[in-house]
Image (cartoon, one colour):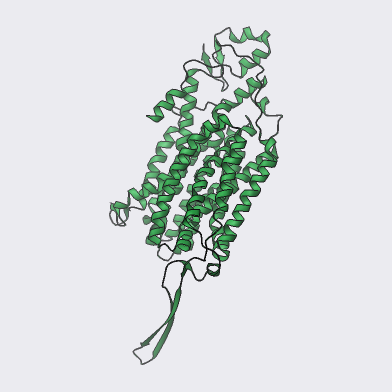
Length: 545
């Protein structure tokens, strides 16, 4: 019902000077398709996270957890490498339909491979690695989706649309593990599809659900559903009195300081969020002496509550930005809360955490061969005697422990600050770029976020395990603080100038396309262009008036 009410709210009662009622309806249908696509791409990453290790261990018991890290990291790596390329492809074609259809076909193929790994006779871990990399490559269509969203929304609609896209991505991350949990009743053995060769189990079912939804998404991008209705360039053309859409941006280069500042800020923001998501379970086990089961259970509850808080925050961004400038909300509502949230994670407990002591026992085994030869084996076994911070991490002995209260408070601030920051960075970024094709720029923005997802686990292994919580959260706090200070210094460059309308639209005007705007600037040509009672549209088609 909420979606239906939003649809009715977006449907105009009368035609505007930029589009007809029908065009507006088609434009919003295309925007809703973008929302679903962003949801699906997030779902494709998150739906296998909880099942990838047992699935890999079942197919190839010798693969190990280190290789599992490569499998998880293959997705953001593929997306990072191909996002700028797919963005350029969309700019070159002047349409996102072909890149989107191609990427969804690849997503379907890769998800199908992941679900049918049992059919391959050997090297299952490499097939899984390749499938996840291809899923990442297909997810590079996020770049053209963001680019189209910027082109298909007016300046007034932009903030709300980007908020909804970000919400769709968050929902994808939430629903993914939930879908994996929902199919656990299939069990490890599952149901045989091809006797003795292929089964539908709790691991492959997640992949098959991705296949089904990607086919639906593919159909959505076909011409009878998805009709591209860019409006940003037409709005700028009218506001500037330009003779063509290209003239609105051709002679104006983007502000490179502000654009690269926002790309860097996006990297820092996503890096800090991904770091916390990656570190959460092991951090609570080390600091609070929780068992693995307790850590998974309580972190699951905390992440679910945090997701609800994030969803509420996404919905509130639009109204908040109507009262305060977007760059101020980004600075104080996004980055300031993230800085405080990271600083709260610097431990202030009265004493070091409980140490998980290990004891080494030598196991001697003697085997007498049939020929009388005696072979002795000596093996050292490490037995963990208690829960807590592993004794092999030297910092556990002298670094103060975190308290549960500071952990919860820091996570709550992150759940509010992150959605505000990630939404408004993309919103301001698209507005600063203006009506120009944004495929490559959105590819760079997406690539920076993917790079942070690749570097997060590396940072955990190299900094946290060796140096501890003070260094880990001290470094990340400084990263956030430096980014916030820099955003404050370039504050004036983040101001999106209000457009000055050079052409006053009359209420009776149904639609103004490129040719009609030219006529407004050249009245002597107007009679010739309107004598057949057809109004040219920006895409070259004609609408009978």
